[in-house]
Length: 214
Image (cartoon, rainbow, N blue to C red; front, side, top):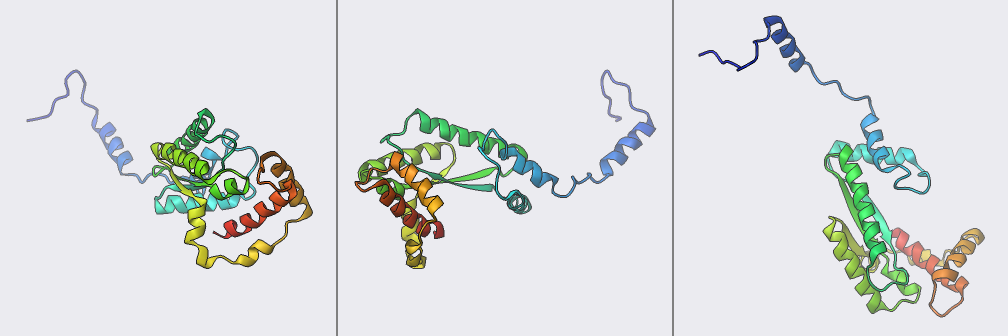
């Protein structure tokens, strides 16, 4: 029995041949690098940054690798503690902001984004925050991050895991006068460890030289 489409006239034979020929044609591949460029552009916009990246070509290479592997595009971010001891509206707003970034990435890349937050409890300790309240604060951050599909790790745990590979000589490196001046200005605002702002800045720099390796 011949199939019948109700209410529609059968297309002429030449139209059917054109449709079949179109279906058999290989899809035109996008220009080389354009997919990776579009993926980078999805998050490298002024909606998500305060300055231009210092190595745009490296971003494109990372994006290209994620596309070729069909794996999520990985983001790793530091999360510090300020004066608050509990998660409040600013933290939730920031996490929702990161979720928006992940959505933008997913719109260009099916596997989406893999966001890992490094909770800098070591920095909080250097700034004079009590360990118990700091851990409680970051537990709340981890819980909220997990609800948005993000992973969160304590920086102290990462340092402990890589302790055998740490070059302690890094802690002896001295900051340049320009970096020390910048860190001292920041320490004057955030450091509450009982020493001078400059000494707090030096302690922070030493810790960062080790944590940078981790």
